[in-house]
Image (tube, rainbow, N blue to C red; front, side, top):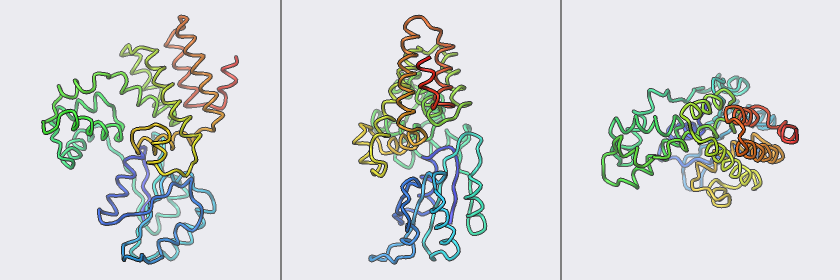
Length: 315
């Protein structure tokens, strides 16, 4: 029994799969899709003799009935059937106390994180695992260029492998592949703003403004992410990630998982209200409004108080 918690849903899933090992093919359930009876599958023998395993992600969304089922299961768990719970938390937040209380007496509770100083060595190892040689200076340049989000960094390795097959990836290659430096940082800003991480979003925005990034480019990135989240929020919640990615026009399954997690933090009405705020910010910037005022207000509204968006938009 394992409870994993941390800021990156990507790292949490990777750690869960690492715990289970390559020979175990677990059932994966998002906590928001919990219907009851999920733990019963762990106690049911497989027709083909395979080990049963269950990964439950997004566990901050578990409802009382699911918590009761988990508590009952843990009183008499199935032998040799791993259960991994994962909870994505905000910056500097702790593991959900109710889950810690449930798991700690019978299993492992572990924070999953990568410090910035450890990201280059992590990239080197990830590259080796997929047959891509990354020079140390190339790994450092990736972190400087893409940011600290592990999912985005992992995807950047795929892009580099396609762009420079069989070559050793250097700082110069990273610069050539990712010339749109500002766009990469806008992705980080969107992740933090729509993840309701107010301090992180404001720091990311400040970095962009200090680097003199084009305010309309920043706003365009926010608008693009918002359009994707509106598509995801409007689709059935139980779609598998692959189907969700295709239906929403996303390129990767990890994007579908990440965007669904972000979209669930807002009602559809709140996302529509934010769309009105983005449109208003666009008009203000194009009519000469100061980006050092307009953009911080917009980002703060998204990250901190989306429910008030309609009131601000009409004001």
